Length: 347
Image (cartoon, rainbow, N blue to C red; front, side):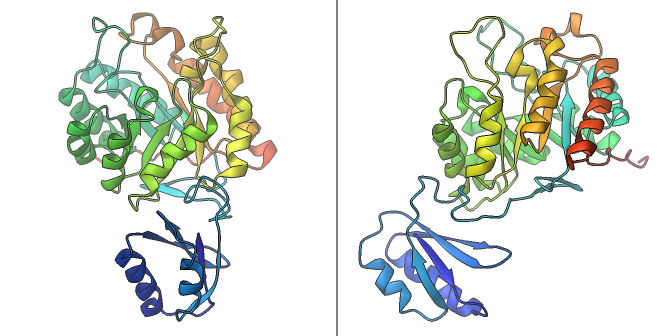
């Protein structure tokens, strides 16, 4: 249910409604839009509630929410959500690039990559410290050491950092050092982890599950939003199908569809979506045209020697070429690239 507030309502009137909802075991989320302010009511709503709320001061009307997405859907919030990370805004109409290695391997590797992607035009630095791997014998990241190296690299080049959190017990640690918490595909429906990440208040980048439907994916975002954290970024990273020619099947039409049904910003991951570096550029460009607010890609100084996902990683030259092509496409369709990160001042 949506409670639509009258123009000129007071904060006291808003607080009284929220307090009443809390009394009866419901949760109200205040959403301030360009043209109206609403309260999205979630929980077990009884039939008489609409009549009761409409008698309260400041309420204009109530409207049932037909969509399963009570907080993520455009029915509740027609205008796009913009997630701000440092000086970067995702969902603002400009294309953002998040780039870096699949895994932090050493101080030299992450520092070299951070400098290269910043100079090429990226805005955020990515890197895995805690790595989920199919085989327990594969390189699983440096853990806390890798997280600290990533933080150091980000600060040295003036870039916010994005890294994956794999379990509830790591949330506080990662939130202390990272600017964005990434929920990977294997944890896309780990609801306790989604809620714990949401409670940090930090932006959460939610990847689509390996075989999640669009409804599964957006409802997973609902768990984060329902904690009161509005800073959710969706990420299409391909899904598992019968096709074996690529690592996953990159669902380009999901980008266009989700942008229609949800106000949340959405980025594309052509590295995992294809598993082949040669496909990253064309799929990234297609994603931008389809409506993606940004792209996250894996970049490594020497992909042939990467400890994980080298086959889908771009080297520095190929990443520069991708940025230049994206700049041309972005300008042509009215979604130019966000300015590159500025180098941090020397300590």
